[in-house]
Length: 247
Image (tube, rainbow, N blue to C red; front, side, top):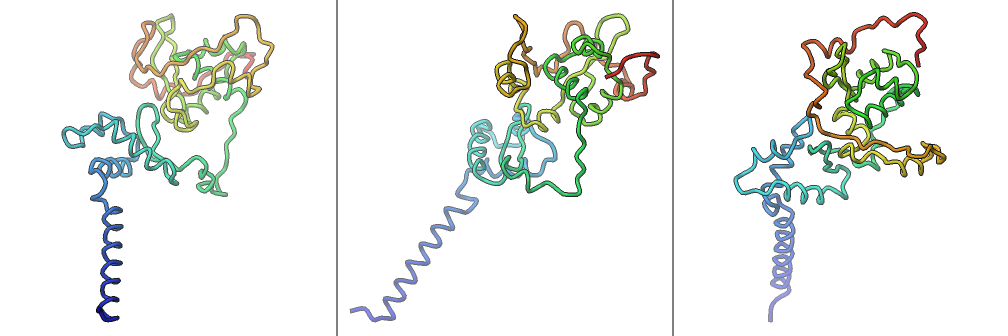
């Protein structure tokens, strides 16, 4: 018959084996190596990374899309989530915990109604020129309104319209998608959603539609590439015509 000391030794050995088993299951070696590699790349990058860039750093034969989907599922219940922004991947604070990152010293800068209208028009109608924005709004758009949106990084000059004067065309950026937690422009609300939120009058004219925005960065047939210095020109002061009605 085993002595009390021998029984205690047996119990201790069983407990040690159980602990070692749990540690083995939780150890990095228990997870596919590609998940560890993707984690490291995404955590180290200051910018979202696309699938092609990630694939170049993976061993041959790795299904990067499947690995990203698995990693995204792993992080879904955590405080940090893996999200896709404009077909690129990045880690972001979980949406319901974003308030933790808010600092009382941060000054919130509210966009004017005119800026919100212009941003909405650019998002849905891009590529669009300033004159086309004014035609849709029905009022002259202040250069300062575009400047504010350019400074936020949510819009940018895309190209130049092939019309007299070669006006700049504007479109949204990845920063716009990131700011509003959109995977693509297709996630923007449609006509019925806008009605449901009260942003549009339910008594709209017959035939009224909301355009389907496009994420395609390729210049259209009526656009041509930007000239050198166009990015600086977009923020340069502009002399408004006297007596012009701005809004």
